[in-house]
Every structure is written in structure tokens, then in C-alpha cells.
Image (cartoon, rainbow, N blue to C red; front, side, top):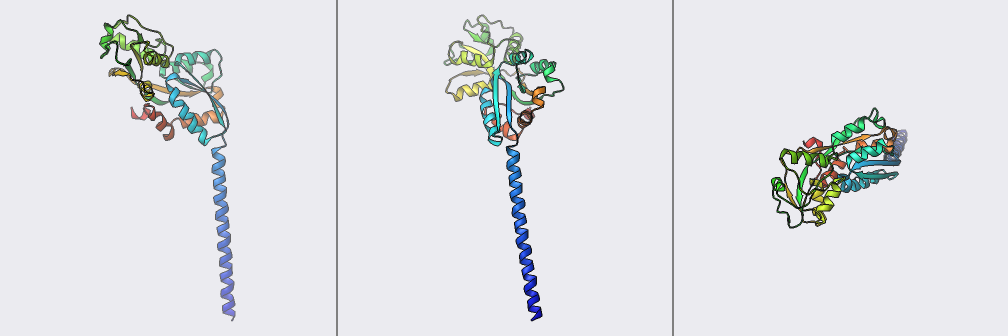
Length: 272
């Protein structure tokens, strides 16, 4: 009888132990889930991003994806030519993060007090291409055809990355355009060509892809001797003190962000 009672007592103790362990496991699991949830929404505030005009389309998806994980973060994006963005910051406009379409303009920014102690990191690359309007009215099938055309050719200002590359390419081919526009950013060049206001223009492969997705029938001429341009990102001193800005800057190099950029034909810096 004593042995029987002893067995019952051991069984009860074992059951109680298992029950407590189960409760502890449940509590720990709940605590872990709560911590993960808290971590996801722990970053908050407004992030002011100054980004190259060619990032406009991808930027919307990048913002949406980051906000999905961090709903308490709000964004304010300013899209312009890279040289204009640096100028705005130099003149006192407020920004947390700068993304330029070339290293040259980021180097200019690095000399400003607003970027003291900040380091830039390349988040993507792009490629210049010569595009022709619907139906190719200027009969432009190679860059050398620009030597003979009287049609309008849209091109960025020389201090803007797309302009720096385009002007160098023209110089390398000894081409002087007879009728060229002078645009402040690559988005303006794209508009000139897609609207038919220009027979041809120098834009990025990402802008060409976006135009085609939008139903625009543009032709293209590859420029094999043009090097890919890099997109460095850097926090301002103000951005460096913002957890939200720092988190977003770090996230831009993540697999998730890189997949979004690839969807818009940007290439990962690791692929070069």
C-alpha cells in the first residue's frame, strides 16, 4: 500500500513539474514574440531622404517595404539631380540621408560640415544608355549617328551624373550636338523623349525599363564603353543621431532592399 501511495505521489509531482515547464515555455515564447514585435515597431520618427531622380520609382517600393516592418517611421523624399541635392544641403536644407547617382557628387557632399564624420556606402549601380523616341524619327541606330542628326537630343547638365557620363561619351566620339537640351535631371530627359519633344536622349537603363513598363515604345542604343555609375548613400550629422535614419540606411544594403532595386533594373554593387 505504501509503495502504491509513493508511486502516486511521484506521478503527481512529475505531472506538476511538466505543467509548470509547459507554462514556462509558453511564457517564454510569448515573451519572445512580444520582444520581436516590440523590436519591429521600436524605431520611429521622420526620415528626410534626398535621392537622385533616377531612384524615384524604386523609392516608393523601398519606403513601403520599410514602413511595413517599421510602421512608426514616416518618410519625406526629395528627388533631384545629384548636384542639386548637394547644393540644397549646402544652402541649409534639412536632410537625414543623401543618395547620389555618382561618387563625384558624394565626394562634394563629404566636404560639407553636414557630413562630418560620415561614411558613404554604395547601395546600387546603374548604366547610361542612348534612347530614341517612338518610331525612331531621327534614324539614330548608333551613337555616331548623332553627328549627322538635326533633331533634338535631350541631355542632362554636365554637373549632373547622367550629364557627366553623356558629355564624356560625346567627347570620346568627337560629337558636337547641333540641337541639344540642357536638363536638370534624368527624369526630365526621359520625359522629353517619351513625349516626342526630343528624337533621342541619354538616360539610365532603369529609366528605360520604367518607361517600357509604362507602355512607352522607346528604342535603345547600348554604350558599351560607358562605365557603370555607383549610387553611394550617406547619413548627415542629423541623420546619424536618428535611429530611424540609421536603420533605413543599413536596410538599403539588405537582401530585401536589393531585390526591390533589382526589380527596377538597378544592379547590386556586389555584382560588379
